[in-house]
Image (cartoon, rainbow, N blue to C red; front, side):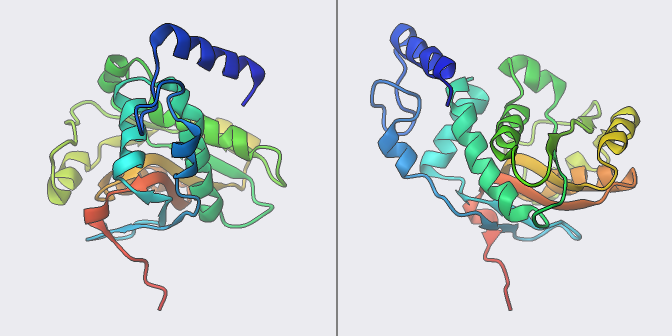
Length: 239
């Protein structure tokens, strides 16, 4: 964290009366003891049932307790001080999801509906993805963020929908910007694409994003998220 960001956080804590999202302790949005409780290892987290053809999705933990509180505070309540710690968690999933060292890496954030972005006043997934990229920059290969996807009009809010309803709601809902694809090809013609999102739930959103990218001739290597919904998750099969 830079000195300027520390000062900004401190000013916000003083003026706004901030408290830790995890425990309520006055001060930063994420206190040190709660930060120390965060998971550190990302593993494959497959939804059950898994949408056919879904690339391997990685996450650092269950969408519960502290992780759930962080994601919701950042997304719905615009606690922007959480962008960096959530980006760090996402970066851990990206590291596990990438093909290996030496490959240029392109992080593609799953898009939100334009109305949701306007209502929230920010795009939380894009912000976390950019934070993850900044943390991963400086290695043996470039790390880029590419906003390749957009949501077509008519998509409902996914909250409360089961797996079948989510899949039906999202079918054909995403499109790829051909201009963005051309710009990306000019910068990194052979890159590994990793989809980025906050939470893996049923996998329907990731699968639709993957479909749209592949329909444009782009190969998606894996998906990375901060958390995965516990009741929808099965253990990875290593047999």
